[in-house]
Image 1 (cartoon, chains in turn cyan, red, purple, brown):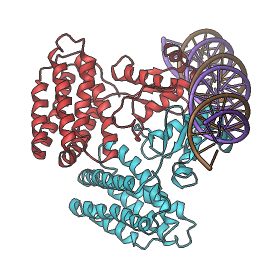
Image 2 (cartoon, each protein chain N blue to C red):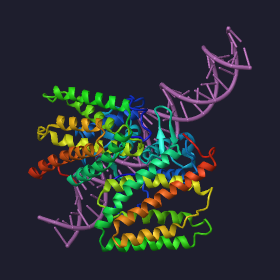
Image 3 (tube, helix red, strand yellow):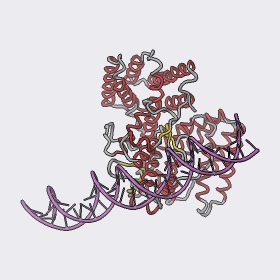
Image 4 (cartoon, chains in turn green, purple, brown, red):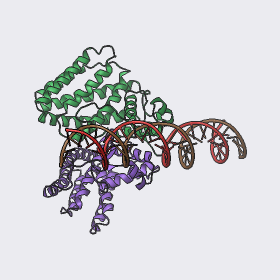
Length: 236
Length: 236
DNA sequence: GAAATTAAAAATCTCGAGAAAAATTGTTGA
DNA sequence: TCAACAATTTTTCTCGAGATTTTTAATTTC
């Protein structure tokens, strides 16, 4: 997760083994196949991902940037642990940064931005329609990410967007963990639609309010689940 | 730069070669011995730092977290480039985050926090006294960092503090680049003192104002230098 | 003389094996 | 039965060497 981003929205495909191992590992952590706190034994994992030991170590080092992997001294790597407290922190920090970025984006976005926002919303809506069977879940996840990304795309601060991409990843991980337990009761589509209209109308205050609630609601629903099942999925 | 920080303020010394290479490289980049944009040839550098190629690569991968090193595809590593625009972004983002963190810290700090803040200020002041010959520069830099760190130490958000530590590092790099060109005309001591008093008096608004100006002033002074010497130290 | 093609050189990326450290297991003694 | 100690196993950390790719230099051609 480099700050000098992969040239403007292009999904650059991996050209080295390090990078593809990095991506595969990242996916497996975010989607929960590698559990929080789990030990990441290099000798064991290198076979699963089909690379050498040194290559895998390098990929794991890159994942530390994303705070998805932690390492300590002479004791190897672990999947970053999770906790409700951490997710609350992520949520609050994200609300602050993303609202700020959204305001700037609304203030500076031009016609092309509006067009791409509309397009991103449309693609997301299409994915929402046919997301009854949880098959096209990955597609929806990707388009949801892009919608949020485009919302703040006109914000000129690269650092703000860099930090937000890290926080979004973290939040996605928590969100996915909870989705096995509870089908979504919220009408996320309506929230996204309201967000779109507020942004297109250049109503920064309203858009920021909606976005705040949107982000916070995800936290609250997971908080509620955790309260019901206090012994499960709790770590560190 | 791991988010699961080295246990509460303890300066953990490196126990692996990767980590000591990481620290040495970070120092050399921040202090300008490795110039912005410079190519980092692994085969060449491994001798300088006395480690193997794989070890050095791993250290470089860790430096990507800090955005001090960038890498692209099959073309190796480079020192992250610098630009006035980037420094402006760093400054603005830092003002936003650090003021927010300071407000939280002032709101939540207890007696122990006040005490450590006073202590950090005192150590900084001592270093300021004898910093006439630029010998004890490193000492002053370190104590300045700690003072800023302690100011926001009582802020409960780990993520905010994590991002701020990255931004501080970046800012330090720019600050050091300019100090070869211009002795400090500002009375930084006075600024720090005002900041201390506002914080101790729990005057969050005033403290945030002072901190904003404090951070922005550093940017403006470098901006002024760059305007005079438009052809030097300009990259990307 | 400049552009394009080709050959040589350098650098990156990758792997497997060996030394050092940590974790596990088994053993001994109160 | 439990704790402390020692030997074994596992895992991490580290290095050097080989295969691709990129970069540089030289040659040819228009």
